[in-house]
Amino acid sequence: MDLAQMARIRHWLRLHGARHPAELWIWDLICIAWVAAWLAIPLSVILGRDELMPLSLLALVLPALYVAWRSRLHRRGKLRCDWLTAL
Image (cartoon, rainbow, N blue to C red; front, side, top):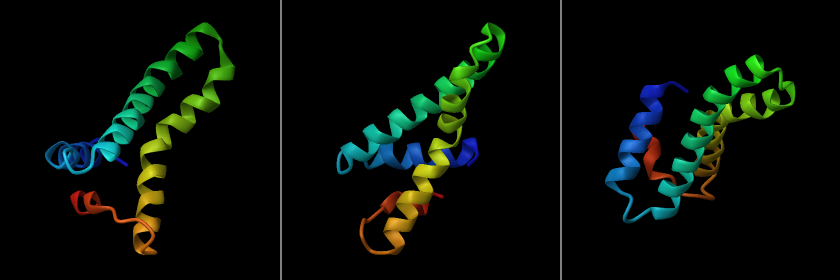
């Protein structure tokens, strides 16, 4: 997932956040984890804290995993996901 796609989802959620406050909150947490991962990876290399690396790498792919999970649930009809049109 690239930054433009993440920004489009965020923009859609900001426009429709009143109707989907939980989705906006979850997406904000995912974006915070993603940014934290970008900061944690260089720090873990510099400080030699290799135990942080797996968690950081997982946080890097978290937005893509979340979108894939929501897309799959939407296709199966188990969960409606209106912001998929933003992609």
